[in-house]
Image 1 (cartoon, rainbow, N blue to C red):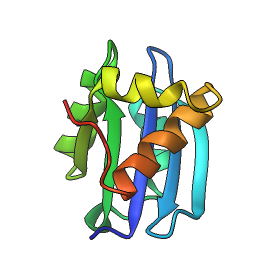
Image 2: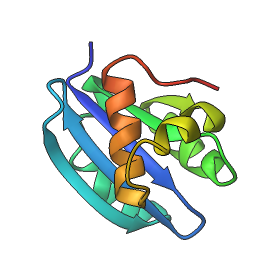
Image 3: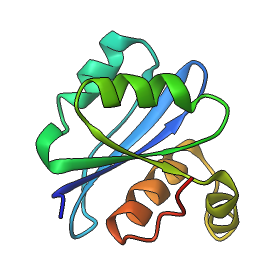
Image 4: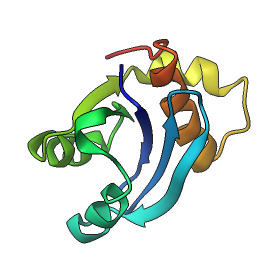
Length: 113
C-alpha cells in the first residue's frame, strides 16, 4: 500500500496536482505548467518509491504518463467515462478533479482504462 496518492488533472498547458496521504489528508497541491521543469518542482513533494499517480486517459494524458513512468513513478490511467459519472456528483473544477482522482486511487475505486 502506498503512503501517497497523487491525482493529476492534465491539460495541454497546465496540470493541477493534488497529493494526499493514505488517510485522505491533503499533503500538497499546486497548479503548474506542463513543462519538465515545473513537473519536477511539483514532484519534489512526492515520494517516488511510495506513491501512486492517477491520470485520466483523455486527450492530453500521454506526455504526462510517459514523463512520470520514465522517471520511475507508478502511474494508473483512469477511464474517462467512469470518472465522468463521478464528477457529476461533485463540484467540477481542475482542483476537484485532481482530488477525485487521488481519492479514487486511495480507496481502490479508480475506474481504470
